[in-house]
Length: 253
Image (cartoon, rainbow, N blue to C red; front, side, top):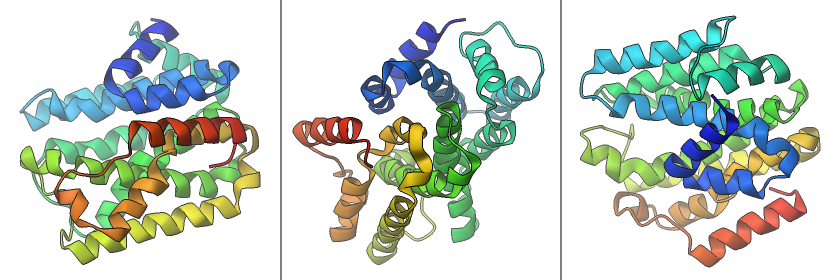
């Protein structure tokens, strides 16, 4: 039950976020490890079993962890519980992050675009807001952080589309090229709107490092939406590293 265990989990299961945390100031890393480890645990819960009910039970376990007053002896649950108390993490946000992952356990498509948007709001946007709160964000920054997190979540989700289809899911409400292109443009609009409120984020800027690739990836899709279905979204290693270093040193995102 340690921060080292959380860091190791993120390093093995979510290397992009691991890189983002390592680019953050040393003083805030301990605040980010438990949040990202929790996200990884709930994100993978639906995929470790073929039985949806078992997946739901795993997700409920994490919802109980978040809600309970007493900590559990678990390598992620323990540090997360401490962080909830120390940083005042929004329990409802963490709960919805876990609850939203129930969709991943089943093969039914999203009901409509609003349902898809809600999924990104609870997962990508919720995660970034929880991370920002861990870094000391004020409530005034919530809309800004969530907007950027939604776009970052969309970029990551679009990269996962081929794998989701391979696993028998219907990941998009409308998979036509023009619809996918419109999604990417919406994400870019949210990034632009979030930047207008950059000053509100303040000391919590390290939490937004996790979205360092989002704009470039969404621009790829906006130019050629076929890269999604082809599994060709991605940046060169030079570009990835350069963007992360620039964002970390400039504090701009």
